[in-house]
Length: 366
Image (tube, rainbow, N blue to C red; front, side, top):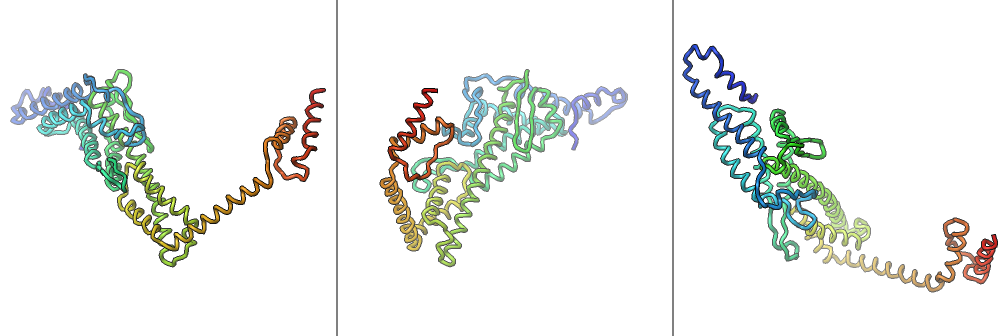
């Protein structure tokens, strides 16, 4: 459906033909024009062109993080939804929506306003998807998460809203010095020179683009974690089927990998796959209860201790202290060659000292 221009509606009323005939619907047409003018004026004056005056710190300090959890641990979404400008934006959108509902045609300004409402509703959908886990895996502290399925659905909806914006809406925003730049990798909202960066509408769009990028990054990290978790789960399934410890490779390293995946989910992931996380927790308990795995880890521990002991023996029987090593370093500096650490039957004897000293003395005479 093509959005009507307000000037086209105004031209209809001014047409000379209508002054010669009596048109019963003329009152309705004039009412439509009045409502269309009101929406245009309020879109510009209440949302896009006038700076929001307040002492709200979030109005000027705009984050650049690539996760819903900021660098200082703040949940960035709440910096927007808890701000004064957001509360004002909600009230203004509600008020203008009442006027827009009475307008029976779709003008370009109404189309742009409806798109802003979609962005606002998308942000509210993100807020509703946030879950508060007060105790997760024994960690007694509050963390905020979004379920993986909800996050992917929200991401797809945000992509649909921003990437399918109508050209006429982009033109209206451009007229108010707000540019929306879309690439396959990111969404950027830029307030051009002469625009009002702290207007409610521009503030919403800048935050919307930021939240889209944050969710996309968090979902990518969650997908990478899920892939690694699935690999660990499938590996243990193979071990459970035939009891061959070779499926695990290094049992100690496999156990540590499962522990690291659980710690990563608890401490680093904002987007959570609860099903995979619970399976990993159960897997950890199975590892701890498996006699075969525990036996293999003991064997590996003994092997590590033997290797460390052998290293200590070699260090004791073949010492390389600074008194011996300095000659190699001096020779390499003089010859501009890297030091050689090959074993030599004469290494560590008085001949090394004589060779190095003779070179130094000879270079001094030169």
